[in-house]
Image (cartoon, rainbow, N blue to C red; front, side, top):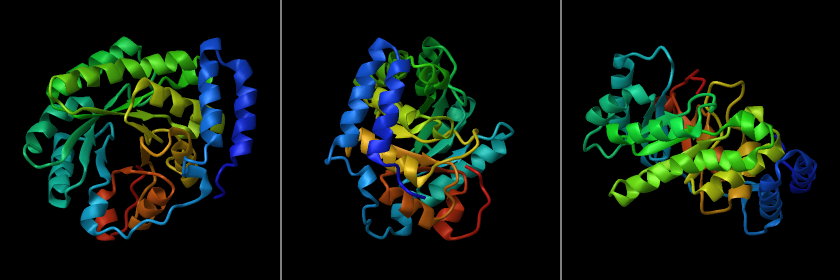
Length: 281
């Protein structure tokens, strides 16, 4: 799959300018500047990566169980798998955070949950409250869905404020000694390249730690072209998480070569053991 042309995305952004709010024009300008920057590595092509050990591979994976029908037993299983393989985190729905926090105690595996999931259409105050409760319950990584409808309506400044509400909760937790990070899910399958670019700028300016491709609930997951575009726009210092459809160590290494620093997967055990998986997330 060919990577997006920076010039083509810039043309899209200039077309998008007429449909965004006045406050959102700064996001368009920032996205264009990022696409023109030689310091951003994303669209220059894949960067050679050192070969990863199994341990190094596992340390980049958020082991994920977000199926709505998941049971306590399913959550316990992924938690034990995460400890066994030393994954970066276990990502579950907010209701399971207390259980996972208990199961992962002193394991070195982080507790990750989702906010405003999967549609991102909650009010900002609702997302902030959900984030506060998740942190109280033990979560230290928050994967929030931005307001997709607001983004596609051109209300980019509102999208940034929506993200900032959750980021501010995480910052208060940091001030209290909890190292909480925020990843912003764009749901790239539903967006144009220009919308992906301004969403990345909104997340960066709001102070998020990562941008993330997908929830796993829309048609389509992470693609190399989207990861490369996101890396180009956010620059070298912000995290990029690829989630949805990453099923093998080769997939992980390809995503990382195009700019990903974290992977979300439900078939994580198969990825690190080389077994075959049909997991969709």
